Image (cartoon, one colour):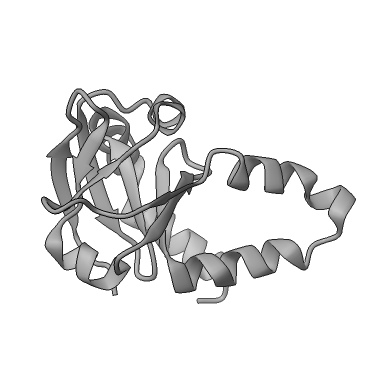
Length: 139
């Protein structure tokens, strides 16, 4: 299970370090794609396959935008010997990632945020808002 958050940087070649704790669970190869919250989403292969199976089960015409959004910038990645992965220019541009990133665990997957965007998102989160959402979802 992916838990916690870690701050890292992106080097001039577009690489960032994935924490060892996360790499152990991600395995040797995983997928990075655009998240719906202007961040990047990182899926272990098992989660990626389950996610894409749901997309494949959607009606073709209605799911075309979802397919374009998810697959067009998705990237298969493997960490190098130092635990870094390459974030493509398109993915970095989408998430507004330039130098500093925050990598957060979300249970079955992780997200990579530009540090400023994560700080803004984190400041906007309130316990009351989350509580209201949980109640609305009968959680």
